[in-house]
Amino acid sequence: MPKSDDLFIREDPIFINKELLEISHLPDEGRIVGRDEEISQLANAVNPAIFGQSPSNVLIYGKTGTGKSLCAKYVSRRLVETAEEEGITAVFAYVDCAQDTTETQAVQTIASSVNTDSTDIYIPDKGISTATYYKRLWRLLNQEYDVALIILDEIDKLEDDAILMQLSRAGEAGKVTDCKIGVMGISNKIKYKDRMDERVKSSLCEREFVFPPYNASQLNEIMLARSDAFRNGVLEDAVIPRAAALAAREHGDARKAIDILRYAGEIAQAKDVDVVQEEFVVQARERAEVDRFRELIRGSTPHSRYVLQALTVLSLDHQRDGDSVEHHGFRTTRIYDVYEQICRQEGTDALSLRRVRDLLKEHAFLDILEQTRHSGGSAEGSYTEHTLLENPEVVKDVLEDTVE
Image 1 (cartoon, helix red, strand yellow):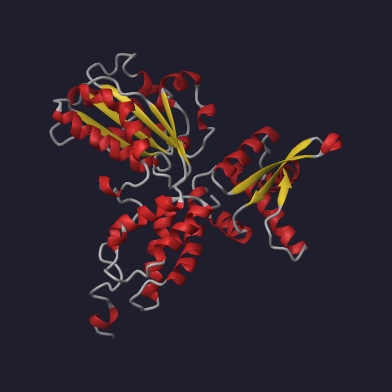
Image 2: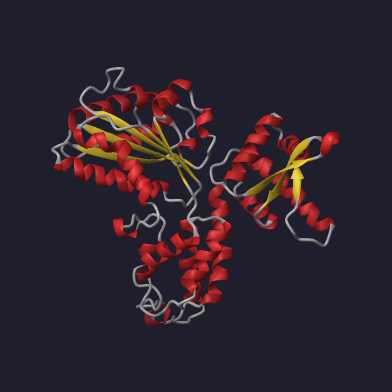
């Protein structure tokens, strides 16, 4: 058996505080880069809460890695602190709707988050009805708080609008009389609002914000702000600018830019070298792209994946038929034909052509594909072509890995 000193590294030669490079890490105010305006707008929307008044309900859109969740949590945390200084008892609860997809799961998470050791209210993980969870949540809010902010991240992953209806009408219905409730919904689907119940939409969409992708300069600042995750002198000067340029050109996703930086450090570890070299960034980027794509389609519906599979099949066939590996576009109707074949193979009914167009738009919004409008003249009229931006082999592998 090897000695323990031979088996484990006692001192990491690359990282000194790797937590700074984890997605779950909530940075200090000074480490939030490029989102001053968005933070100010969110703060303005919920500002009435520090006086015990109703905060505006907010819907935040933006692609993954644009700082939506980060800013929502930061503003909510600062709100609670500032309200306390004004003698107002405030709280915020965070729900990851990709994990808590049902009404029962979401209300249990909220109730558990706002509960304290000083109450006599018990919130079990399971075993009671949805209605009972609500009754205990309303009791908690009335008894303990003046204001509550509820953050519903990836709100589009909820099975239905039931909890949105309950939260938005709790005061009107007299269920919550001593506490004001505000909701921050976060989605990377720009058309999510179109699927909402009209009654919910009117009450929950008081303020809407769109977070744009980060540019290279902002990504560079974000990574510089976290560079003390590494030991002094281990990063080559070109590593962060190269990672920022790659991420900005491809997606403007801060999470993946940080992933690239972390993976580059891990590659240095694996190679047993004490310097993170610029060449490691390209290798790290490939690994980050696979992870990014896997995250983008995590929790997507089967038909959303079937549509993407159809475009992937066409892209792979195009590569096999010719020598070109360049990205190639395909018309909506051609994609729909392949999609229908996939649905037959899966034993399910195909969605309408209009709905498939919407799914393709959602994939385009996430930068999985690119849409180009063409004019076919008087004979054909105008039409749209869809080009897969990811490597089709990677897409094929990830789709196979994520089959439910």
